[in-house]
Length: 540
Ligand code: TEU
Image (cartoon, rainbow, N blue to C red; front, side, top):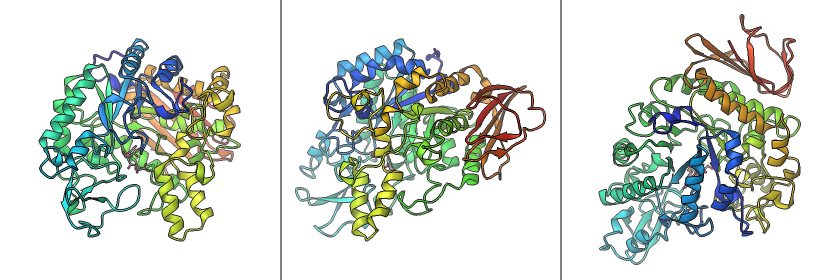
């Protein structure tokens, strides 16, 4: 167990993300709940994780599955009660697992009492908690677009004004220019810290300092000023781990966010690798093949660029991204091999690894008929793109590849009906491959993806070179192999991954022929080739 009274404890930690709606149902409602998570804590302890990032469980109308919060201090009844949350925190602590809550501070639900008051009159004290602009019906303040489609402005006749929303109309943006609003958020965060949470993930934190009059959404001029105040007033009063979601973060900005002096956050989620397989400047639905060499160089840029002056988060999946084994791996012939290969690539790096529920089983994307999709982003995109004249097959192909519902299908626990997720009707279809891919099978099979992840996570704890070593990309131009070296004093690590379906010739660098293999995804063999998706981590 990590010593969590050390302010840097999280530098050795491994996290696991739970999307609670799809994790474990205990009531037959068809949606997961907090008691379900409590039941599965031993499974997570076996995996060896230290922190659970819990996607939002606060009271919410669930327009965006909880990323639309109507009460930041209450648990949504669908998930249980505050008492259940207290128990989850306590039971987690007993196993060395902390709870990281997902705070959505950029916007609230339109059903939050603040917004209901704000929209009642311009004189209401809460009016200024949100971002309003004058206008006339039909004449929008400007032509900014919202994240999930349509304009970023919504008319409210009662006040004769438009409010600003970067996401759905039911997610009005909070006005960080208002110090009273900021204080209110800080008090809420302190209240959760008092309850024993060990960290926070901050949703779209790079968008809080918006300035719609100047068409600014991300990276607004006051962003880091707001973050430093937030951090000083809250996180710095405890030994927390914090991670900000920042689609707009480049390396320079990430150095500010994750500055080792602790003035802002522990780290950010940046997405520079995750957008490489979409056409530059286009939408996520506009796909292109992964530029592999560019991807490797991007990882190297971040590994080297934050070494000693910042901190990386390491992830290949989350609740917004398709399943990595379907995306960058091969989810048919080499599903197990490629899932392990991708994990090796990531877990040999410096930073904090986040495993997204089901990733440790090698769970895959799903293909659904359009009526079975549930995500508002997918449904809006289907409507907008078919209306714009894209062929239906093309639109469906992009949903199969990119829909957020790929990540949100229920967790596959065993081969009983609905994969052991629920005894009721699941809110989103279970992937039919659950009979082959499930946790019970994985636990019983020593060669499973699960046990491979368990080993990778434990290697991080026992090998300081993984948490602290420097990074060198080898074979940078090789079109199939991802090879890198880590070094810390006299400890060295070599990670070799074959990102292809073909046997690929490879000769180890001099001096590595006899090195000790820490982990590999095939039975040992040294004949100068790597098998499809073969991965090895060597030390010397
Ligand atoms: O995501 C931020 C965000 O920008 C996403 O909308 C992202 O662009 C998209 O999902 C890619 O397909 C965060 C949350 O992670 C997401 O679940 C929420 O829907 C969103 O914020 C609004 O709160």
